[in-house]
Length: 204
Image 1: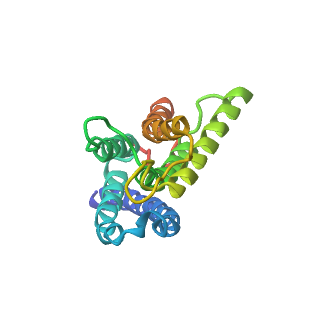
Image 2: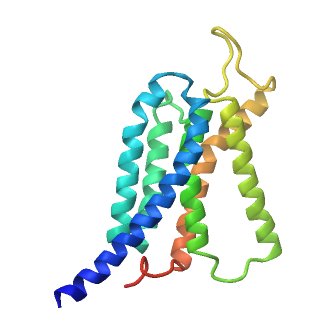
Image 3: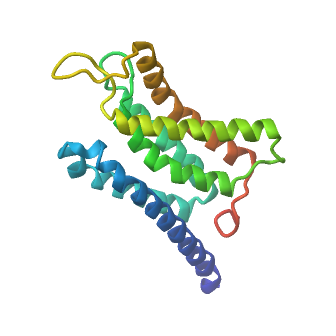
């Protein structure tokens, strides 16, 4: 009786460890080149490892114990982390390229796992497929701009940091602000619509 109760738990733990390991490796592969740009200030590499290590530990624990609901919980935590990042910008929430890039590094591998594990309930139409592909391409484009302008856009001080077109600067910053919640909500929608993750993570 004891062995029967231990076996499923051990299987879930191993599966969660494998999934967390794949996620961790993907994040680190994306993070390494990013720190060369966003981490140009020495303080960034100094404080970053601890919260990321905690995030990986939380990811493993959620996947091991609550399984399917772990993905909803992880995306809600990603939303909360994004709000925590942006709400301290004076009186109006705003986002810099560095903040968007760091959030995207954590979110992109998780989104890929979610999209693969929780596929569409029905076959995607060509229009929806094109729209989804355009959205992913737009996210990648914004990430490239984030690497180019890690501290956002501003004028004055030592030098101007701008595209040269203030309306474009505003549009890019608005997109940096809006994309993370849209990505997180789309991922949560996928999980809620279909529980497609293979056993043992979704075995009840």
